[in-house]
Image 1 (cartoon, rainbow, N blue to C red):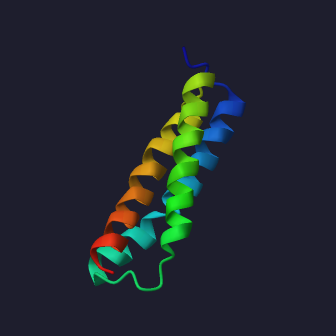
Image 2 (image 1 turned 135 degrees about the vertical axis):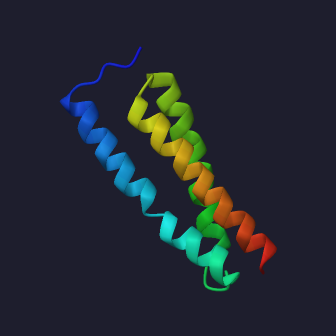
Amino acid sequence: MFGFTFVTAIGVVAALLTTVAFLPQALKAWRSRSTQDISLAMYALMATGNILWLIYGLLLDSLPLIGANVVSLSLTTSILALKLRYR
């Protein structure tokens, strides 16, 4: 199923770092209940891209792509939901 190699390890670390990058924004929006400076279009595009990357990862059976995009999609849709709620 998933072959874990050095290349996969690099992908996992890269995926972890780029995915966790959304966490500070999500936490800030949640705590402050303010999303005024967040671009709705940017997060809508990002969520769409995450969905496509997730599909791509599933088709390739790539653990880094699947894991990163499940978490990224969760965070981006959370930020989108906060943006729509706290407009």
